[in-house]
Image (cartoon, each protein chain N blue to C red):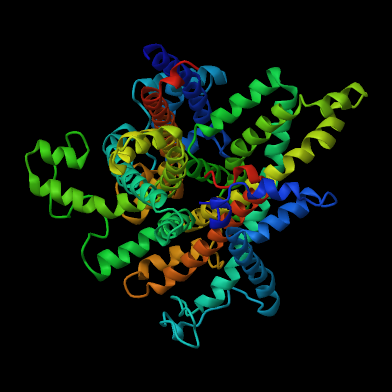
Length: 334
Length: 306
């Protein structure tokens, strides 16, 4: 197992280096002088001189790349052109917001998806099965940003059950400890804040969960059907084991293996969905930050966002692979 | 989910059918027969045909210039017999704009799916067929591209090229290349050692001849299925870019743009966001169903597996 994990981590390093090269060249692809691109039209001459010296813009390109990496590893990602705030500072509170939303979205999407998949498989070819399949099909066909608007209209505007956006009521204040509001509120010992944060989490994370739910449901259903036909299930039934037990102990465990892979494949969709969802819910996460940067031509922020998106994606994929190997020993020995 | 109840309960249907197969029928005729028999394929085909019809016919019967189409005296009317979907902020008829929106989504989808399929199949075939350094170079490059989640990558590409329809097509095409390339490569790897390829080679056929005459024809059904299944995702991404203001630009009646226009009026006029979104959903659903049906029809062995 340890060797597998080490191998998997080593495999990530060249990808990360490649990603950093791409994000470095990204700025060079934008028409115009990189200094103007990175510092904006109205940069002060002193800033320009400092930036040129820091990044070594008069040096050959590979030296420039090394300088860029050097700064990045020191945690210096530059400043936003628009707000002049250091990018690293923005990330420190925006990254937890996005990860928190993705986490809850995964919990919701996987729970509902698996439950729907099991029920559909057990009630195969009935109305319930057709209905669940139809929901899943519509789910993948729906634009996330549109679903967000429709649900905001229904649950926030019309019924007033849920807040239309943001991470916390405007009159509430939270101490930034970890940046995860559900954790910070508990660390502060404030259950009211925790409840409020959760309450604000429901709509965005549900909308985001629809990017994973349909494929989890479809795959759970298919792999349940496959496992249910296996001889050992028939044996378990034949020896008089209750159906409930057969499903929980024998079927589900084996059926869930492929589901983990599909979760790995959906991470890209989750990160993309986060941009659209955060935008609709004025969620102060990485997604809305990235979007704001693209519309405001804030290239240092765009560069950092692309890099960070790729890093999160690569690391999450790696974690899924490793957890898969944990559950299925066959993977480790390949 | 792809399985219709008929072939789900009778997994042997395709094979028993192939036994009685009329030998004069081609692969495509057989597939067509299976496609129109499956329920998914039927519904998908009807929806796709309808959307295509709307996209082609609307501009002919109803010439439309979005820049001059506004009537502020009829701003944001609710749906009525006169304005089926209501009117928007500028008094434009939403139904008319939704109908005209079909051509944008289909044009973007068609352009990028065709370009993407050609490029990814070509690259995949070259990588799989020649192997060695070429293969590993291409694979590493694709791995790198796949290290970026697709919507952020598409947005970044648009940030470089500039917003608009051309940027959208390019971004969506580039994002889709690695996936298609992997399929083409894997299939080429399994095809290139088959006897008839070997035979062709020993008779002195060149690489290009083998690739075009022996490998490509065997890939094409998978490419078609992959392309059809990909259309839905392309339409969704293009609409997302439009919604974010990075794709088609207002006042174009593109569905994503229309939804973005509707956001400030969500409270009072939810119909402005509702209908273009439904149009996207139905179109994407149609292509997904058709893709599922096609996959089952072209490769009966897969039916009922996913």
